[in-house]
Length: 101
Image 1 (cartoon, helix red, strand yellow):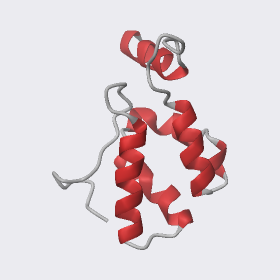
Image 2 (cartoon, rainbow, N blue to C red; image 1 turned 60 degrees about the vertical axis):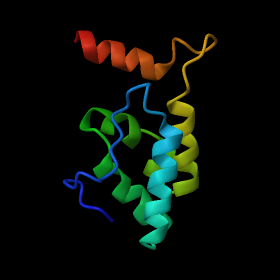
Image 3 (spheres, rainbow, N blue to C red; image 1 turned 60 degrees about the horizontal axis):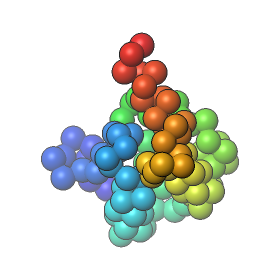
Image 4 (spheres, rainbow, N blue to C red; image 1 turned 90 degrees about the vertical axis):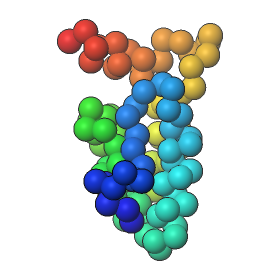
């Protein structure tokens, strides 16, 4: 895996303009190339995620169970793509709260 200090390292900020699906696809490809187990994928991914997002990620059932497939699905549900019908998503609420806290 790339060092988190590398300029080439993946990073997920949690910002809406950076889709979670793109990040997860790149991470999975890198993790598979490094032959990480599903357990290691769940443990290692946190190094590439902005600290402001850790509490969200660690609260998901897939993280607690160290189940990569469930964790991946949990993340895709948590970070929904902005659209007219889900413009008031949990992600946007968290961003708003963090911005004005």
